[in-house]
Length: 279
Image (cartoon, rainbow, N blue to C red; front, top):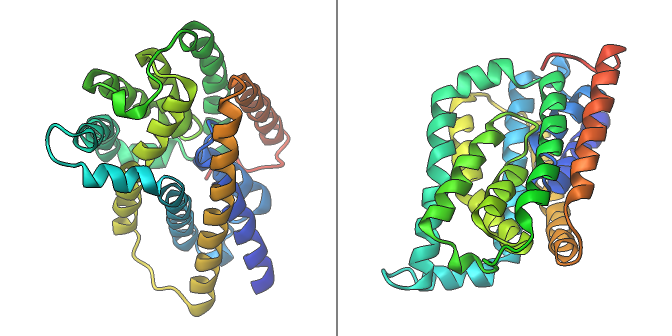
């Protein structure tokens, strides 16, 4: 039983590492895959599983800190007013605020109503069509190709779009990238701004969620949590680097098509009772 638990934790860690920064929704995929492999079985304690899925997201965030350390550390060295680091982090804070406020106010409703495979599937499908529309209409001709050049107005628009990601399955990455497209950012600049914005967003969301989870972990559960965290970190390191290389050459339509396909597949599986329709 313990080895099976470890295997399932590794699978969820891989899912988180692969999907956190791709525009396909990490939370949505963890819900769907968790249902398929029965990761949320009562034997594993629901409170622990909820906490596990929150904490391993920090593994993926750590990957961003490693990959973008030179830019992040450089911005922190230029954090005085008038320098580029000050402007960058002011814009990150501006973009962070809308979803933080709405998420704080509506967290209980979101947790109760939207965390299930059916709502995730609907969000995947809707988000996929929205990505195709947004990319076709806004991406071409965008001029802002460095995150240091993003304005406060652009940051606010990106932040407003990030609110879409409060619906599990919409994807924080997809939502912010679509907001960046409408604001004039290129694919690579949009993705990089989304990555940096993920740092305060996910740390705040994780901290807020952990405050609501009060459990005492056993030694095996601690070991499994560490394994999931490390797996998520390593996989995210590889995926983010490959994703940026992909964006320099190709559009993101392939991710939108994937979202629609997976969303439809999940609805079919739910209809024939292969996966659960509740969290």
